[in-house]
Image 1: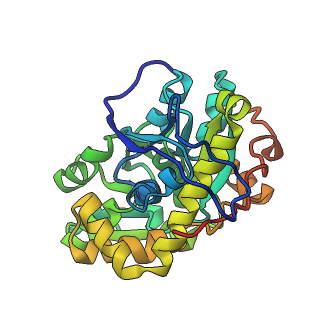
Image 2: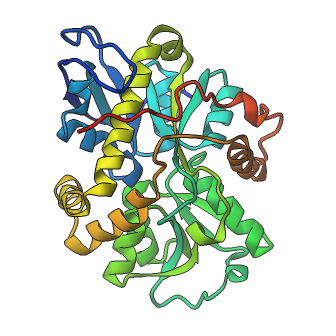
Amino acid sequence: MTGLRPSRRAVLATGAVALTGAGLTAPVLAQGRPIRLGGTPNYGPVLPVHAAQALGLFQKLGIRAEFTGYSGGSASMEAMAAGEADIINFFPPGAALARARGVRSTIIAAGTLTPRGWKVMVAKNSTITQASQLAGKKIGITANGSTTDFFALWVAQQAGGTVSRIPLGGGGMIPGLISGNVDAVVAYPPLSYQLEGSGDGRVLIDLGTAMQPNLPDVWIASERVLNDRAEDVQKTLVAIYSAIRHMKQNPDWSIRFIQEQNRFSPEIARLEFENTIMGLSDDGAIREEWVEASLNLGRLAGLRDLPPARDMFTTRFVPVTLIAV
């Protein structure tokens, strides 16, 4: 796993004040290099990172955080492999695949438990009406080894045959479906909301209700940052999950924030809030059986000799103790 995709970088916060209730100590002034977070920039589960910045939570905790947007989860993992990211938002099978290639990382917190807002979608005029008709068809994914890729393999299993997985990148999913270059796409939120809202796409399978808890996104930390900066890792999670609580408790604020952050219409922003934000874990707590269910999707992709689920994650930092905004 070499090379990085083009990225969008933004320093999120700096500074410090005394903390209450988090069990952590903060320096008088945040110094040194920031905690470098990575993820898909328009993906709902990373919105709390930006909300934490807007609410001053990184500053309150005395850390600097920097978010870099990559073209997908696999590109974020490439960044971690290259030493350019400390904590990323990705999917357990992707972390297992990276570990097999020598990238040492550990799942530190659960993001979403079930794939809420994730949908297999076809064009509005498609003749496909059931999963079995996808056998032998082309399904658009963001990239090989991405969460969309593993979900496409699950879809093939449900269809009872094989499918051709076509990497389109996040920006190519909607054009690829509308143009007929693919027969279906595995659409993640908010892309699924945009497709459905525009009328250009039709839901074939709602993965959020069709699948059991399988952790479509988790927070993953590099071995190096876990060894060298464990307290900063804890503070980062405190900021993110405290922002999640604030977002859930303040719907009007959250919907406006989502609109401004991603330039969504009010309707799409509301769907993002109701489906994605409200489906995020409250405290990052994680279970072995959820990780195991996720790794089973990797086995569908032919991944062999995967590490045991219990070795893929740590409960060292969860459940996260939240702080007031």
